[in-house]
Every structure is written in C-alpha cells, then in structure tokens.
Image 1 (cartoon, helix red, strand yellow):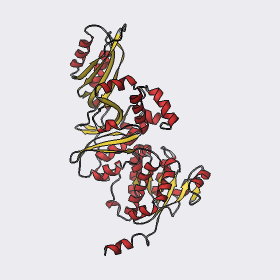
Image 2 (cartoon, rainbow, N blue to C red):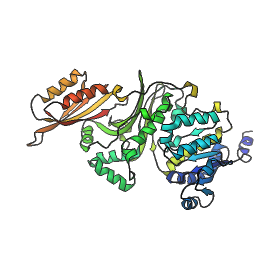
Image 3 (cartoon, one colour):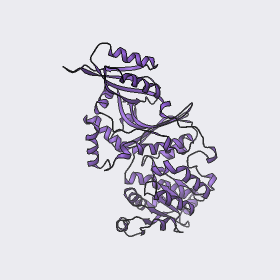
Image 4 (tube, one colour):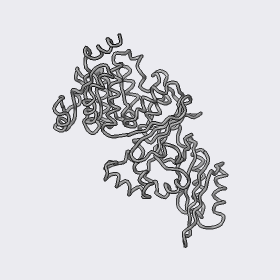
Length: 448
C-alpha cells in the first residue's frame, strides 16, 4: 500500500508556475538552485515547481541568466497580473515599487515569497492583512539571516514555548568589520575600506554599518516571537561607526568581545527591541562567530537556549530559504486558510498590544571608558557619582599612564541598571574637571 501512494505523488498534479521579480544575486541563485535540484524539490513538494516568467529591467542579462528558457519581461506588472502565475517571488527590494507589486499580486489571488526585510519590517501589517483577506500566503524566510531557517524555527519549532529573548548577529558586513578590527587592531574607517574592496560592504554601506538592516530583521523576529505587530519605527538602532579599536582591545582584556547584536526580550512592562554594539562574554558560542557569518540565539521557557548559525547572505544560501518557502506554499496551497501557519506565528485575532519599550526604560549592564587626569581622588569622585545613581561596579581596569602623560584610561563594567540612570551618571562624570572629553558607553549582555 505504501508503494502505491508513493507511485502517484507528482505525475498527475499540475506544476506550480512561479513568476520572479528581479534576477540579481539572489534571483539568479534561486533560478539555478531550483533548476539543479528540480527532482529533489518536487519529491518534497508533491509536484514540480518551475519559474516560467522573469521580470527585470535588464532583459538581455535576464535572458542570458535563464538561458532563454523562460519568458522575460521588463514590466513586473505583466508577471503579477498573469493568470497562469501561482506564486510571485519578490526580490526587487526597497519600500516603493516592491510594495505596490506585492499588494497587486495578493489582490490577484497569488501567493508571495519575498526576501525583502525592509518591506516586511515597515509594511508587514498592511501586507499580512491584505493576504488574510484574500486567503493567500506571504512567506519571508529569506528576509532574515539568509540560509538559516530561523523564521520557521520561531514560527513553528517554538510553538510550545514562551520565548523569553532573542539575541542575534544578523548582519554579516558589520560582523566582518568587527572581526577584522579585533584581529588586526585597526579602527573602523580602515577596516570599512577593506570590506568594500573585498565586496563585503556596499559602496554605500549605511544600512549595514548604522544597524538599520539588522533592525529590520530583528523587528520581524520580535513580531513572531511575541505576537506583536511589526513596529520598525519603535526599534532603538545604533551602528558601529563610533567604535574604536581600543575599546575592542580593552573588552578582550576583560574577557569580552564586541558584536553588533539585535536583542529583543519580553520583560514585565513591555518588549525590548534594540540593535547596538554589545559586549558578550568571550566564552559564549555566539561571541566566537567570526567573519560574515550570522548566528541567532533564542531562549524559550521549555527548550532553554538554542543557537542557529550559518551564512546570512549570498546567492545560494538565500535561494535555499526562498525555495523552502516555495515548497511550503505548494504543500499548503489547497489547505483552508485557517489551517495554515499564521504569518507571525500567532492567530491574527490573538495578536498582543504589549508596548515596545523606549531605550531609556531598558535595563542592562554597561562598559564605560573615560580618560581622566592622573591625580589622586579622581576614581573616588567617579565611584561616588555611580553610587549616588545606585549603579554598582562589577569590574574595573585602570591603565598606567604612559611616561610623561597627564591622562590615563579608566574602564568600568557595571551591574545591571536602567539606561536613564547610566546616562544621568555619565553626564555628571563628564562634568568633572578631571575627566577629559566624553565617556564611551557600550552595553553589555551576559546572555544567560
């Protein structure tokens, strides 16, 4: 009997027709992987999946990349309006035309797969509502962490858990830069130029180095983890442009490494949603993720800590996630909408209104570096200010001044305190006549 069921899997079932919008790096990877692994994918999906139309402004290049095997058009509207297309893959990027095309595809009753984290993080609520009303699916595994199946893990694997927190290295460009700064002892500007030369950073790297790309991805993960609407505008975002090599070296001496982390955590009075440079104990696995790799830690009340590691970008790793979404949609296309996995894990009528906390209300630990006059009583003044703000010191490093120097560095690690308290204390410390310039502040997470 089992052999009979296997025999009838795909032969008599109509193939799924896919329209591809944009055939750049990820688009060409998707086309190639789908073609190369066609038989294996069909065995998993239950029917064949084929890209039959491609829209790209450079039609000559698109025709070359697809070997002339599919219909190529320059107008993406021809794809989203075509009656034979079942699923539209959106790989254009951005908020403008991509949003219009996705909404048109949904209005035409087509399922959508996208790798566009900016679109989902900013307009996801509107897109999911339109898809729900039309009874179609929107899948976006490739929007976060490339080939790592973190969306599926959060949305399905953690169903039994109350997710307590997520911490992720979710931007390969910044992780490459920080790894190079640590390994070579160089400052940010020098390493950025090298990253651009090697192709790890774009000519305009703003979205990466300012933390915006990571915040888009974190916003999506937070929505799935806690059942809240996507709220990118509520995220606290701080990039790595102000990091100094000296702070990376001091962190190492204290047993920590600095990574650009996306952190979201549910606490009593709301949800933290923040991206910023963070000290992590060097003994933690995530602290040892180097180069352009990504890693995401998820802590659930039942399962405890889990770690997901892999390539966060690239043609075929991201294509792997795109095609996994195609297969999921193919399997569930005939299911009743109410029986499908919800877009953000929770049923649409059960979403939470728990607020996202402003950064001032977040509680964490801190690294502070200050340059002070080499005089008696300076340290006593600083510790008194911290004590007045009920901030306790966890560790301290005082550097011997170089010969003839009038100033030296003091590095302090604090126990947990609220952001508003550390900022008030720093303002008082900077006002001391014995403190030179500004105090460098970097947040610290033990991740336990």
